[in-house]
Length: 407
Ligand SMILES: *Cc1c(COP(=O)(O)O)cnc(C)c1O
Image 1 (spheres, rainbow, N blue to C red):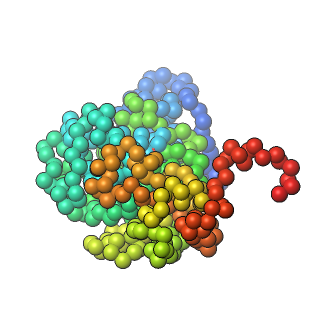
Image 2: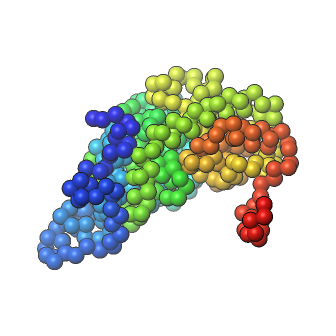
Image 3: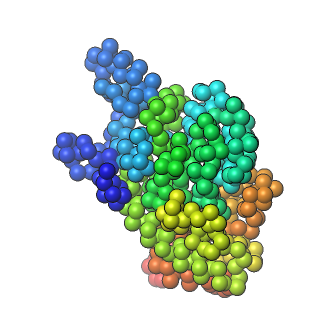
């Protein structure tokens, strides 16, 4: 097996030389000619039963070669046998619950908080017909029952960067498969499958795509689990569009370089924020006390590019004063993004539950991008210090300004 950066550049491209092309073709076909309808039927049958490919793709909800290349590349990076892509990270979470709980007749989930607000809400809503017990990482064994089809965790967790010992949770889960949401760490910094996770999930919308222009999700896992996920995908139609598959695949090539660069800046900013008089608590795996179990350097190869902090002042006022940092949900983009989880990404999680798992109402989440770190620091320092001159200019007022070029 090749090393990480090589795999990131070359993964999922084995068939390109044979096709005589350099960039992967984007196959936008919704249907594929099947002149022999008996053979076509056999291909349809195989794909509906979860085969990774067949003699014909038959129909775009069953298989797409552009998406399949991305899946192959991601599986190589996560060191799993297979990967299955979906139209969004939430569609991927849904498919895992459907495969591991609904299809398997085990309608109970154990989840370790905090989780991304959408995942937390999905699991507690009852929408998928599953019941969820939330448990601390070291109490998973007590929460698991014979009905438990899935154990869910995130590490580093969204939004407070809590670190969870994956092997410990896998041990506590017993026979129940463990899903690790690896969106924050990316395969560059962590490979949960090597610690025993059965499903490794990414919101590809974040670091994998990396440019804020492609929505998608992906699950890396063993061959048999991938087959069940494909069966679910064929039936529910939760497919990734081939253009999204192309963009996520292209994103993988620069993923190691982007994560390493953004992580350097995040580590620097976390240290500087810790010393800022207008800042309360700072959360980043690089900081003293953030890693009591010594996971950094072992399970997690680097602290990552997302951090969180509380402000002494109203966090909304601080965000309004930022000029360079983009005030927006999402993360893992080339530009630095800031958002207020209690108001936005984690709004649908009850306030008491947020507080109980270490997500204070005044916490801000910062996803550090690829800008010069000194420019980011100037912007953050100015906003934190209450200099109002830089009030964020809303996009609508930017558009309203005449394009005279006189500025
Ligand atoms: C954004 C996110 C998701 C959901 O992904 P979408 O692509 O927005 O559906 C899931 N998990 C984590 C950790 C996320 O940050």
